[in-house]
Amino acid sequence: MRKGIFSKMIAAYTGIIAISFVITSAVLSFWFQNFYFSQKRSQITTEAKYVQAVAFQYIEGNMSVQRVNQTLKEVMAYINTDIKADIVVMDMYGYVYAVSNPKYDYLVGTQVNTKDLNEISKNQEAIEKTVDHSDVFKKAVRLYEIPMVYNNSFEGVIMIATPAADVKHSVNRVYQIIWISAILAIICACIIIYYFSQRIIISPLKKINDVARKIAKGEVEKRVTIESNDEIGELGESFNFMADAIEKAENNRREFISNVSHEIRSPITSIKGFIGGMLDGVIPREKEKYYLSLTYDEINRLTRLVNDLLDLSSIEAGHLKLNLSKININEMIRFTVIKFETKIKEKNLKVDVCFDNNELYVMADKDRMSQVVTNLIDNAVKYVYNDGEIKISTKEKYNKAYISIYNNGPQIPEGDFNHIWDRFYKSDKARTTKMSTGLGLPIVRSILTEHGQDINVENKKEGGVQFTFTLKIVK
Image 1: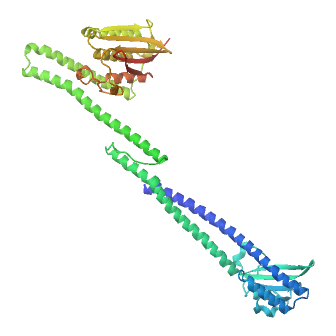
Image 2: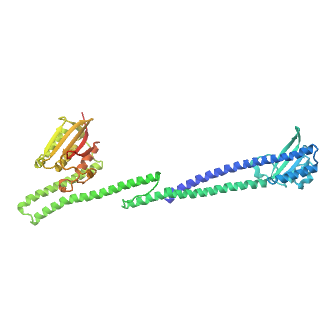
Image 3: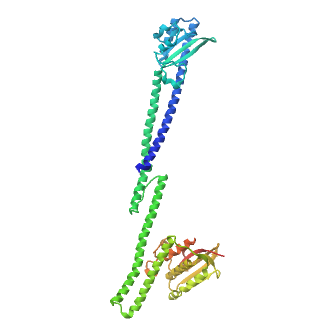
């Protein structure tokens, strides 16, 4: 698991977060750089107005050069608390008449050239006369030229030089904060993703995987406990639902094997006992015919059980192929009742057969439908009271045939209604297993299901039990 989905998920999330933070940090850095220089230029321009006012005083003759220099130094002493810069004031011909730094007093009265400006810039590599921020770190100084216009006449230039190193240092500090914050955010995000992924996804999946392995080893009662309302919770519920189905199937398999073993062992034991008794001379010769007849009945019972098992297995495996044809269900019921005539007379039963019409044609497999009718009538004859009553009726309703078989025997307990269709289930535990294999009703329901029909059972208010199934009518 750790080398699979977990590592892939962490790698994907880390990559996405890292790319997002890198892009965000780059955008913030670029934005801050432009914002910083815009603010810097705005601040320098604002401070230059003070210098410009002093220069205009000099131009009007209200202030001497010495006074201008002194005032300029005082102004720069004030603004240098925020901006480290040197100021040079020149007339329209390029002659310097005021400087802020006493170090450059020798330039006063001289015409400034490139060499002198480089000296002011502390002999750095180049001078930038434009505010082009894209190349700022390649320059040693940023030089701002602010023209002085007095009475609509160009009177000179104020040149303000700021060391690029100071600018670079300020910007770099902000860059460091941005990128260190981004790296820390990526690390924290990865830790949080790891924790929540481990708790929300990986841990539940590991639980499901562990329980799945235990179920595969035969511990079908194991379940997972996942308390969440998301897809992982739904997966856990689906897994438990599957585990319930597997446990039910496993229990059914064990019960089926147990029942089959019991049902087969019983007649085989009887057959073995009867034949063994005759071979050992325990059974008198004059009674051998009687015990041979009992042995024959047990063999028939065993044959019936095996045939029922084969039929039910074939139906449930989907190997049953129906040969649908038009059949008269009323005629089939009459014929089946006649087959049970002997048993009916033995129990002195009253059989009432009532049809709405003499003929009722349905679409069904003749052999399988005969098996359905036979099993249901046989079930009614087995469980009806002696001297009891059986009612068989057919009627048409909504293009379907409804076939009902009623007997006034004991009613089915409420707790048994959901089990009478189970294999080998016998509602009346007091009856001997020789009366039924417990496969008749499951076979009936399986055959009707293959026909696309259904069957239900109900306890009648007047007493007794009634089975009703449907078939498709053919006109």
